[in-house]
Structure formats: structure tokens, C-alpha cells
Image (cartoon, rainbow, N blue to C red; front, side, top):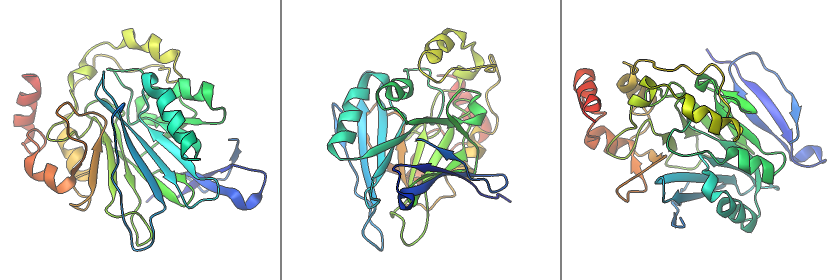
Length: 290
């Protein structure tokens, strides 16, 4: 059973403007730190006026989605970016400024092989921003998260769910549940679950030394990254247990799309995903043929 650990960051000298940042497994602990070209958005609703400000952003060269989430009702509007790309950092930071937000986190769903994360560049432009990645990624960041951890921005939060398969360290970030939380829920699935598909599995079977040097200079440096490892046999089971168990109306926001889709739902993917609705043997055969 998970116990909660809170890290608390101060956005201003006033004590009443502090808020919990991350809660995770382990004993309760409190510490202080300082802290698209095409764009689409989806408005969520709740039983109370939504506190969540949300934007979906697109980088066309790598067909990557970056997501901006912020707590619009908090006095300082704390915000985070999910899967930022180096080429669109200036655009994303301009939007953060336009909307009057306080960027506190730049987080990744996994170590990316098809583009360079914008996390390190963001940290050079916005002092105090913390980088986040999963502990299982075996990558360097200011904060590493594990399954069950909560990444908080004000009283809103994302829960970390382990969904390895595309890489060893893939995680899905899911918005919190409850009457005061944005509904329907939202799942930021990275490459673990794409719209009608999933991420490649062959990256894990190749030596990735050639990308480590790029990562070193972008604040996601890797140490002891496992190379030439076998594809996870539990890829399907992890998606089914960690994503397909969410409410069917949960919105699925992937890290990439190559056909012009922007959002799906858990219910749709349970019915129509051409890869992750198969049994394990059929899935392996499909992925081996790619």
C-alpha cells in the first residue's frame, strides 16, 4: 500500500502560496525547493468550475504533442509541460507568458529516441523549473517518479502509472479523480498507447549509445541505460491494467500522431486499437513485422 511523500515548493515568500508538488511512495517527508505551429485544445468540465487550463501543442517535424496544464484558480497559476520538444520551446514559453502562468515542471513520459526533449533548454530559459522523468528510465532529472506518485500543481495533480514496453521507463500521467477534478479524466500516454496503435518496441533491442550524448547536453543525461534488452512481454498487460482500467470516457492524449488525430478515449482504444486489442502472441508478430 502506498504511503504519500510530499515535496513542497514555494512560489513566493508568502506562506499561503505554497503547495505540494510531488507525493509518492515512502514515508511522509516534506522538503523545500525553489523553485502547432498548429494548436488544439479540449475543454474539460466538472461539477464545479474547472480549475484546469489545458492546451495541446504540436511539433510537425517529429509529429510530437506537447501538453500544457495549469491550475488557473491558484493565485500564481502553477503550470507544467508534458513532453516538450527543443524546437518549439520558444513557442511554448511564449504561450506560458501570454497566459500569465508560472511554469514549475517540464516532465517526460519517457526518454525519447525520435526527438530531443526541450526540458534542458527550458531550464536554461526559466530558472527554477524542475525536470521530471520516471526512475525506471535510468535517466537524470531534478526529480524522478515511480508508480503511484503524484505530481501536484496547486491542488490539481497527475498520478504516475507504469506502462513500459516502448521503453523500459515509459509512464502514463493521469489526472486525479473526484467531484472537484476535471471530468472526464485525462491520460497522457506517451508512446505506450497511441491513437489506434502503440509505440515501437525495437528501440529497446538496439544499443542507444548514439543518443546518450545528445541527452547529456539536454539535462536528461543517461547513466547505465540498459542496451540491447528484450521487448517487454508484459506490454499489453501493462496497458490493459494501467490504462484500460480507467473509465471508458477518459481522454487519451498520446505523445505522437501521424494521421491527424488529436485525442481518443479509453473506450475507443479498447474497441479499435489495432495492436493492443490482440493477444500477446499476435501482438509480438505484429510488432516484429514493423
